[in-house]
Length: 302
Length: 267
Image 1 (tube, rainbow over the protein chains, first blue to last red):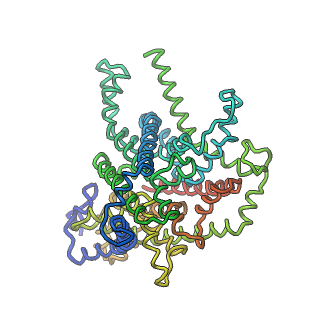
Image 2: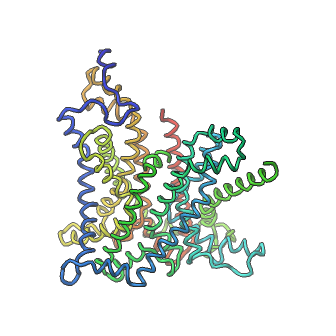
Image 3: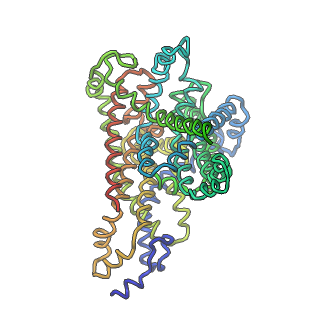
């Protein structure tokens, strides 16, 4: 028995499923395990999305093939403005997240592990608090009679309450708050993998701390920067709740436009075309993201 | 180095500190607001009272929505924990063609913007009413929709524990005469339990918090707690929402502690 045990194929540490080839019966059983999940996804995910894709290409009046809905989305000024606005605000949010998130990730990656895991609570706690609770809190903080305006007035930094919410400022603050953890986590996971001896070596070779950082650490953290920025931008362009609650009319996002078309204007085919455009951009970014850094590494760290 | 170095260092710490405050402050503000005696959102509150909590507990619309959300989340957790664990076993242990495709399919609902999933389900659900099993404005419709979003979280969590799993333990069990089912129940399951439990927690929170899909498909007959809060925030901001929020924060912190304890238990 002992001999059988030691000669048994082991997959520990190796590639998953790299063991002995399972017999056909075992293979069938494994597929059986996947079946319920696959049926659920096929019927309620793939099929509905397929329906949306189909509708985006079908004329609502005569049922014929058309690309008119796509053309309308990218040529008519009101819609084009919403699309460009979504990208513009998402870009601002992404850059601000990087500027705020990089130092924090650096701190987390360089302090003692005990301190890091304590500080990590600050980063992941928002994940656990309902999105609506957080946005509601920001409305309370940012409104005309809110905490921040009261503080600014008392300190004499403002003569009258500043408009901080239901506009561009409000959307950007809210989105940065919601998306910052998605920047910090990939940055942290990449920085954690950078050998600290490399920085020490750069210093020993006569480099200043700034040089060591700029020439050694920063380039090695590029994958984290790329992954974090892609992740934040990708999530941001699909956002609906945050701009709806903290933004004004000028900060309408694509998702809000889709919602309007569905529930107010009942133009389902046009909504479908907008959804397909948003989906195409998101999938493209996701593909690049996976190339830069696997999703597993991010989620493994949470 | 020297003077400029230490200034740079303090600037760095100050920035990091500011970011931590930024991340945590909103959560801290809501709790005192919920005990305010005023109907307006003044901070600090002019006096203390429990009227907003009483308001929440005394309003059948609020409590009804809460109970509905709990039911939906519990059903989603049950469904996803079973199907997700099975799928993770199949994915990690199986060697078959198209495995990568299956993997992508399972993660896809996390990647596709929720608004798209929401309208896709809204369109897809619409005709079910004429077939006598309405999915819009019903609990089953919400459960199915939320299961799509929660499933990948269970699969990811369980797969992670399965990958660090020593298969020799299962073989030892089988060599000692245990049936595959006994081996699964007595060896595999206890070892991957932490992954299953954290997956289940994620599934529960995902469903309990979900808003975008619920806005579209909960209709007027199956409003969930987030939908009720969403309407409240848009129409009349009164501190009842702060009371609900504080209760939700308490639940989140309790769950977070549960996960932390679970991690400690993990070998």
